[in-house]
Amino acid sequence: MLAVFDLDGTLLDGDSTALWLWDRVKRSPLRALAILAVLPLAGPMVALPRTRRAGASILLWIATAGLCENGLRRSCDQFGEAFRSGQSALSWRAGGMAALRGHLKAGDRVVVVTAAPALLARALIGPLGQPIEVLGTSLKPRAGGWVADIHCRHQRKCQALAEAGHGEHWAYAYTDSLDDLPLLRGADRPVIVKGGKAAERRLFRAGLANGRAAAW
Image (cartoon, rainbow, N blue to C red; front, side):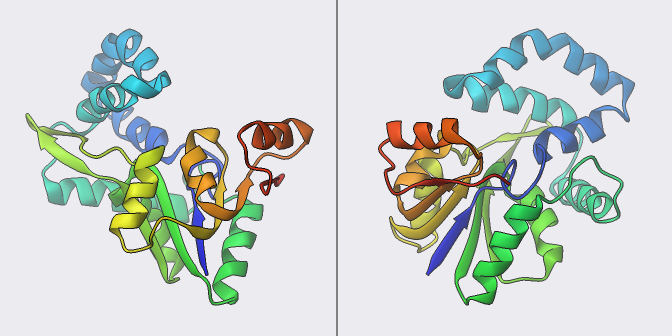
């Protein structure tokens, strides 16, 4: 069976991309000034699904300007190392990791599919030393920095799974957001990682009668 997990807010208690970008920006006064200058424009863009990719790309470009591909990989790896050594505001969510380990122990295939850059997600997941496939947003060089290429969110997560050979349906899907509704609808057992009656009502209104809410 195939178990599909979102990353941020599901397995991680935080936004890995935002923390990685902030880690880069805070080390450079010039980057920090540039971020402050564009935030009134980029911030609202990131908040809206239709403009999220463009808004995120503005912030991403500022944080990565001057990095070659090897430099980009090193930056992600260094962030992953800081996370593993406890020098990051990120942490694993106990409930999410328990569910993930349960699937691995049962012999299920596990895929993490995330809107975070694939390079960053792999730097965080890889050191777990488990057979976990990672799919995420691809990046491309642009004018000396990096921007989002294919943004792995909403329906695109399902397309990424299909392109990776996992078909259009899976046994389990875990996420903290109904932005991943296509992912949940593709699962026999969809789980939204927010407990309580309100989360259950949201699942029911979304037509996921077989869904459940888990308080992680």
